[in-house]
Length: 489
Image 1 (cartoon, rainbow, N blue to C red):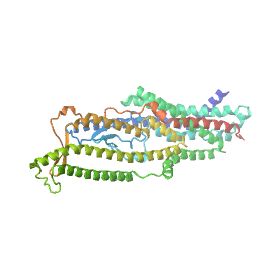
Image 2: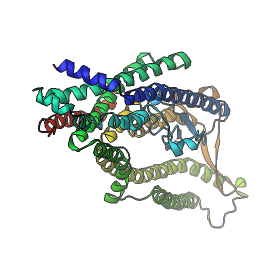
Image 3: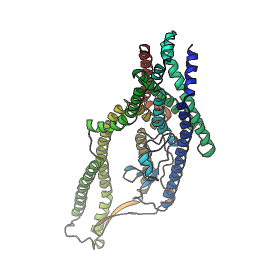
Image 4: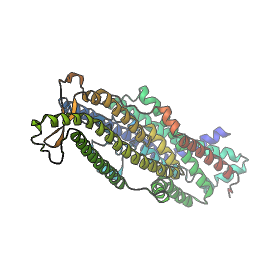
């Protein structure tokens, strides 16, 4: 009996023009979205290689202590499925001799219009287009049968209600699933034939299968929500109105409003204010360093009977005692400066860490609010699985620290053997002294960038995965129980 009900449901949906429309949308948009995203990834990868090569060529003879090392971050291969925060994420890390590293965005945006309207990638197709189509397919699955009188006829023939609702869900979902899979397979074939991305290799295929499973589960949630609305409304007109309102709520309002609500609940200062605080701290420590430097010079000179207030730095080269004092100063000031550089780094680090913790707290409030919508959970999952989400911000920081440590050990620590600060003509200068074996100095590059493993990304988003499973079970169970007591008259 159940098998016949499912077949009947499938036949009815297939003969409906809506199923043909869904198939056309999937066959056209999914391959197109995957193809455009893949081409964009190939362009970004080429830009990454060019930028890295130009950096190495530009600095091959530019070896000095003030040199700022640059590490270029390769685009995520899995970004072909979801662009996520790609336009916002840094693509370059800089590190200097003081151990200060900064993430930067160096490539810019090729087409600003894309920011106005968004990109049609795999993620967008599922969360916006297919989510809406899921509601359009199911909005009259119950109310339509009721208005036609067929629902009363099936119940009168003693068909168990749980079988009727199960057949409705299974039949409509199966037809939708076939259209979706046809579009996905068409997209994979297109990528294999027209792009250089090895989409069928293990590095792509395993994450893609995980993304597919999560996507199918997410679409199942939406189908059950559509069925439930069809049960709770009196007629098809009310059902389609309720479906559109619910879609706007979960796809647009909740995700868009959640950051604003988080800002109201837990307001934090702007980045401009924090930057001013950091500059004030730098000026404060710089002033203290200048004072200490002057006191050191005065102390060393006084020990040799030299009055710093009256000394003529332009004729200091003719005075052996002054020359001896300056040599001592040159040796001691290096350690003093290193101490103040470390003090400045620690002070700035405290400000940045405090601000980062505030941002994370506000971010978590926003995430928890947006998780009310299944689309919010799906967004966090897919963006992090494709290395274009919020987790990538922390991952960039981890890679940046490793790059800063690498540049210190492989470049700056070696350079310090030949680097010296000296005073000439009353001003502090810097330079390289002694015979330097420049063959030991190579331009520091970020040759290896580590993305989080698939298991780690899933583990970090276990809440979102659990919520999607919960939503699927919850709406399915509620739909079944609501239909059992549904008035078919």
